[in-house]
Length: 358
Image (cartoon, rainbow, N blue to C red; front, side, top):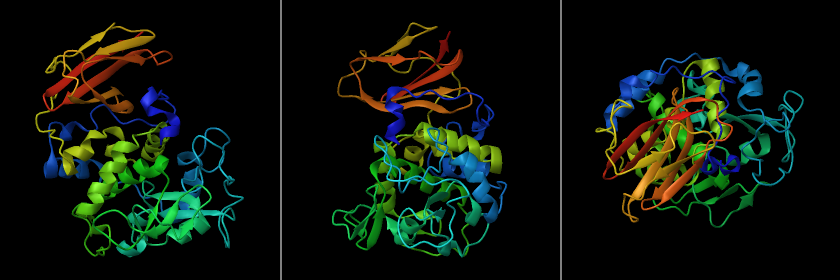
């Protein structure tokens, strides 16, 4: 979701939605691979299922546009420009439809037929989005993928057609770039929330049970990296947590995806903020009021670096990739006063430090 400019240092709205306790992910600290996946599963399993009918009301909190109060539909929104249409909660609820802009319904991003429409999966808000009914129908049970030669294109640019991504040759649905990261983190959530609880799930193009297929992991990691966590996702995560009492770990901690499915290694991650500089990195001024500078000049310009700033509840305000050998200014003007965590990591180690904003 680039329209909220996470790369431009997003402001988290403190106190607007329910936040996780500071210890929410404590049992996952320092883990990687299957051990991390298992720990996260145990943290987020057993959530409160609202029931399928209750999703209509839940969407008024979880998927409400901040600009006009309308339904936030990822299949019709056009970040950076005006969407072709908007839906009003309740009034435009499907019903029947025969074209785009007729009504919105409930899109199971992980098709419900593959888990036999059973609960709690059927009503899990993290993967059931409000979307245009016609576009939802066009997507059907097709996998997500990359489409170069579309057979159909929606008004916001979502595409249906043969998959051009290596590993699968069937028909796929490709959302627009601004929502690809949202879908990737949704699938990482599903593969973790229902890990070891997928008895009876069908195998299909994207997964065997709840286990993502190799080509899917490769695709979704690309989407995850290219479309970082947005303020929309942060707010939706908090709103869902207030209702069904679990969270999407891959929104709170984007690095978890690489630690489980990618090349990231979290096994040596420091468990305390007081674990000082493992990299040649500096941060000043601290405390800061308007701007803080992250000094990466002690690192090689060719060194790939991940930079994250979080609040003490674990919510991400900044997550981006940089090269070393530079000064990185970060605007904190308007941020709530308090303590934040700055995490900078590379293949050479990790820097974790408190940042005080006054």
